[in-house]
Image (cartoon, rainbow, N blue to C red):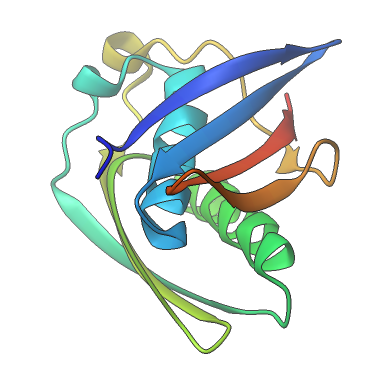
Length: 139
């Protein structure tokens, strides 16, 4: 059993995100945290409002990109940031909740705007009992 966690990795002008978990859902949650951490310090985002996201894809790696792009869409259209995620994956269908709050530019001091998750370095796989979900996001 591993402790779920996340990390960034460098990729030219963009930023790679990587989530680690005991299953794909945990890895997806951690990657979403990594993505939010690109924008601002996670501790500044209050998890006061919840939105629901549903995605469906035949391939797990495509489901991962859809998940991240759905979050990016919600951030852009709702002008929100998210700091808590709960993901369930069953039969190629992802159902999730994202908790966060409206962007407060003074308090959050967003560093960048994420334009989208890409297929660059896209991978969702298991290695020695640990699930890893990663890709590069366009900033």
